[in-house]
Picture 1 (cartoon, rainbow, N blue to C red):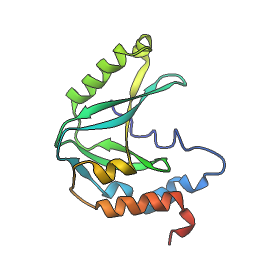
Picture 2 (picture 1 turned 180 degrees about the vertical axis):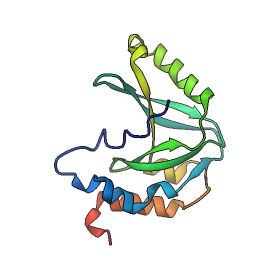
Picture 3 (picture 1 turned 135 degrees about the vertical axis):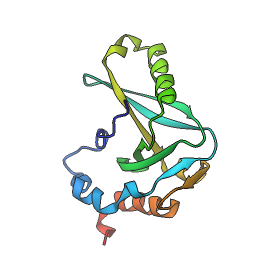
Length: 149
């Protein structure tokens, strides 16, 4: 199971009211659907049933499509898989089992993928809708919401 509703785990602070759903929704981040054109390493967060979040990286196969859906931090966006990929998720689950907190495996709730600004600029991506330029503009707007019109 991939968790899509983990949008603000790393961004909730009292002074970050710009990340309210209303502001993020107006940016239409999820209209920028892309797929990897080559196998690529992407980061993800591992969510467990109590206040613990791990992280990892995995090789995601070419052709895998994602839609960004919210801010992670100033230089990254959370994203979700467009089509379920059971083999990818199974591989990620096996990686969790082999880590130092493998005893937490039975509490695993899912994963949140993310992509950084640097990865947007350098990974081999093909956009199904939207554009790289729009996603980069969205990242700038998320860092400087006062410039949003």
